[in-house]
Length: 250
Ligand SMILES: Nc1ncnc2c1ncn2[C@@H]1O[C@H](COP(=O)(O)OP(=O)(O)OP(=O)(O)O)[C@@H](O)[C@H]1O
Ligand SMILES: [Mg+2]
Image 1: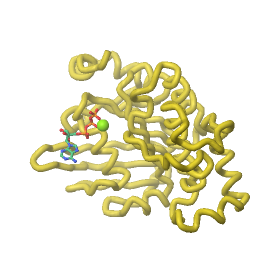
Image 2: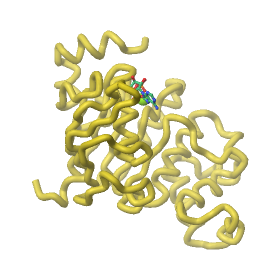
Image 3: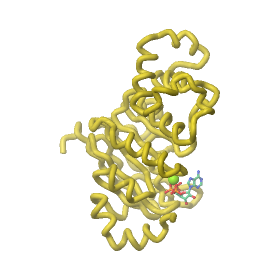
Image 4: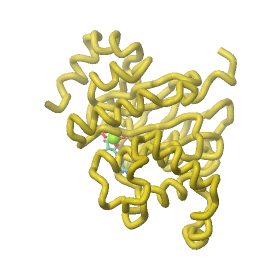
């Protein structure tokens, strides 16, 4: 495959925490435009791998490239500038600001809140905020303070925050965790409706969600990749069933 067609390449990544080998030699390649799922039991190393890719954690060894650029030792903002967007397992919203204000901040990650006020009058930025609000089904809530949104709507906004700067790859760590079935359906259909040009890397425990959303699933266990295939192939694999299905939450 041509290098330019690869969105993300991780080669032999390692990360240990005081002796715990959280990521122990992970190699994976995600072609541009693919929807990739990442599953594995609690403690498998999914979030740690995620943080190595975004740059919030430093790698012990290995390499990571984004769209052909080696970012192994590059800071978070450098990776964001290459088109990496992410949502967080822990909420990362400004609760006292409105939906629009949050989206404006996300669309301009390098600006500081101190010079925030004048932007409200900048049409292109506000247009982008409206466009993204529409995309994540929050158009009616632009003026609502974030603390007044439901849990599900806050998740939708988190997705919007990731999308606002026009990312080429979006990473999501359990975007449906803790949501009601209705809220989960909402976020799943928003993710499913993303532009096919955006590469997606999704950590998710729910196999049904993965079946609907992803092209390929990578299974991690004890810091390593133990299987990779289509969601249908993965759900049939005996080793995956033994290791993973047994740990599924009800
Ligand atoms: N900051 C940290 N300090 C020490 N140990 C950590 C740290 N972060 C993760 N670990 C350990 O690394 C291992 C992998 O954790 P990680 O959070 O990556 O797993 P995970 O697959 O995301 O699990 P979950 O499904 O519960 O979110 C675990 O043993 C965890 O306890
Ligand atoms: Mg995790």
